[in-house]
Image 1 (cartoon, rainbow, N blue to C red):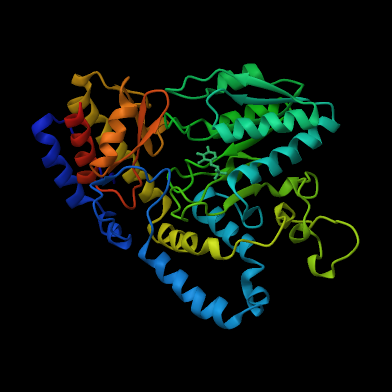
Image 2: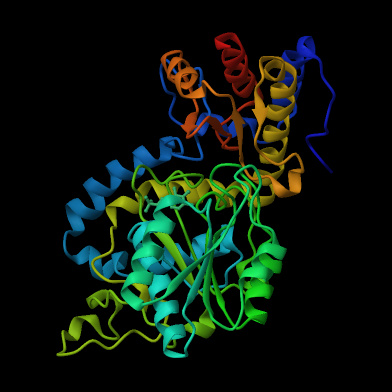
Length: 414
Ligand SMILES: *Cc1c(COP(=O)(O)O)cnc(C)c1O
């Protein structure tokens, strides 16, 4: 049953609707699991940096006193070494649709993207394929990393011109790939518009052309249910500090499908990706499994808030998170139509809930300056050049009343 039926509203109805929806929201109680933020009226940026859980603070304190404080160096043997794979398996099971043994937590999204993309391009270039397909609205760090890899490997970037208000369509990918394609790199949920790309269709199209696909899941994980194994996905990366509440700069995750283990080799071959790291032997031999993606010492401490985030996500389940997410973004769009359209605000996100992720972008020429004023009022969204205010509605920590408070403040500023 759908817990969030659509309603039609006029301005006077919106407040009543927000109250009704919050009262009926099966996820409403989870907001209390997060630390309160004094002076924040509406936090609409959970897609850039998720809020801290109370349990994260407790975990950090406990870890310092009990794990680090008393186990000291013995902690490595007692579980820390296995953490990148243990957490990777958990993210895979709870959020990615990935069977165990294919995901690690390590590095940053940028660095893991480099390692995975280089591994795929190295392999393909050897077989004579020299093109990397990406789109013009791909996240900046992804574009920059691929530019560097192309320069290192003598590969060529082939650009799909994507509409920043929607995203990349399967037909565009079909027109861009061919016998020279080494790798296709796309975001599953576009960072500006929130457009949800057709993961299985695009993966199939790339495979039919003999290419691999690397998905950036930074705006998907913990927001939109994923089925990487079902898609036949090859490689993926994503952030844990957005919808997974891992905290600023928390390590990323990387997925490498089992069939590519021992075939694709990432270039930063450090000791933690060695077959036998503690034999400290003369030359590098990659681990035969997904551990080969690791390079150096795992960032154990930096995974503590993420572990609290995963506990919560597992308790709630991705389907329930997605149901509320669709309702929140739908409510935000109707509030925009009612309160903001009269002020020439345009919606730059998909209307179709199936093609819409967890955030929406609104546009008006003066939004850079308007966003500054909103921040001063404790209404926190973010500005995306040239003229977008992006509202990220993290389902576990955001109420309908909070969305309406933010949209009302925005309307007042206009
Ligand atoms: C947030 C985000 C990143 C950030 O990468 P970092 O290495 O953590 O800075 C990368 N890609 C996408 C699509 C993002 O949304």
